[in-house]
Amino acid sequence: VLQRKLIFTMDVEDWFHAENIKKYVGETTYSSLPRVYDVLDYLDSVNARGTFFVLGLLADSVPALIREVKDRGHEIASHGLSHRMLGSLSEVELLRDLRESKDRLEQLTQSECIGYRSPCFSKHPCLDEMLIATGYKYKSCELKASFHDRYGSPGFGGSQLVRDFALPSATVFGKSVPASGGGYFRLYPASFQKFLLAMADAEPLIFYCHPWDFDPCQPVPSSVPRILKVRHSIGSKRAFRKLSRFKFDNVTLGELVYTS
Ligand SMILES: [Zn+2]
Image 1 (cartoon, rainbow, N blue to C red):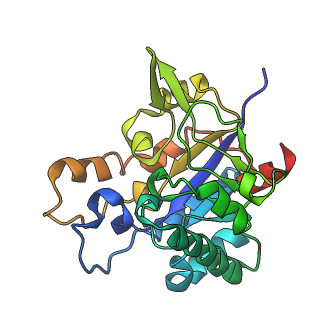
Image 2 (image 1 turned 180 degrees about the vertical axis):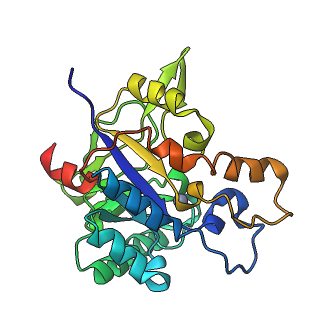
């Protein structure tokens, strides 16, 4: 039986960028980003590499961290500039966001940034055209069961395509259930998530998480409604141990664009 690939991906953003709690957090000096180093150590220890979707603004605030991710053999892709939802951006703003995040990350790592994941998988009608116009080769911002479709782009010449690496979901009792994701990763027992991944109709399977999924010490302010607080941090203490239950491949999405 051929094993499907399981690709590790992380959206590199701080705990206060999370959409659920963003508006409740004022000035803060606490950062969850150092957890990324622990994740890098873990991936090294199991000989796995993956793709890190990084906020463009972090190229200025934590350049050493991003270089470290790159130097350890992982791919640096874009998670946009500052985590603004795509629905709130005009076409011009979207173009600028895509271009500037790519430029900043490329200048820092001295290598091409060809992948993009939108904040919270948000949508924009012009996304594919804009990705092609700004030189991206793939996106990973759909949550659906099948992701073999490629998007042509009539406006920019039919031969140019943006590969779509969607996140896996499984159909359980006729309902589509996400099989991957930071919150789901923390919430589901590892065995259940593995069951969902096995049921998902996708190749490769994409795992995703955030630095703050591994941080039980986030100073989430008391003004954050309890339900959001629980959703944000449930299971973070166990997240590390849980990670070791998955067997990740030693390949990045960027590499797969050219080989599959
Ligand atoms: Zn995000």
